[in-house]
Image 1 (cartoon, rainbow, N blue to C red):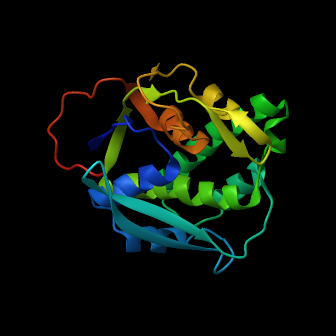
Image 2 (cartoon, rainbow, N blue to C red):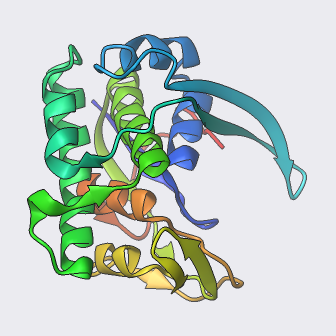
Length: 219
């Protein structure tokens, strides 16, 4: 089994994680065919990638274009959606771990029971694709262990379905509890709730990378 080290010096989000896994060698077509195993409405989303430059370095951007799906989903709905899919067991297990951590954080922040956690329309579909897509990519690449660097705290404000919130957003801050963070970065939202949930749920090591032989790098 392989070890994946996620360098979060620029932050982390769900789409960034999927983009990195695709750049490492998980084909977009494989991602499409596996995500089609989820019982989602036909045409509810479209996947695309494009190459871009940041500070003169090429990288991959992963985009989820949402169609006409306007379904309101609670945590229990998403659990049932993943469990009723034809995805491989390790993919379902990892996706469920991430959604569980995300839902637990949202439940604590909003003061509601876990089953009452509600994921807003477009955000819910984005999160499903990003989280399940991450699990698919890890499985395809044969990743057994995930390690991650310290996460940048960020600063400023972000607009959300609940209005203007401080950075990191309350759910993100809750997910960052127990994880190493740093302030050595400029203002802005550097870690999204989905990105924080991926690290909190799947990473077994934090900080410096473990000793390993580097076989591939994805941006």
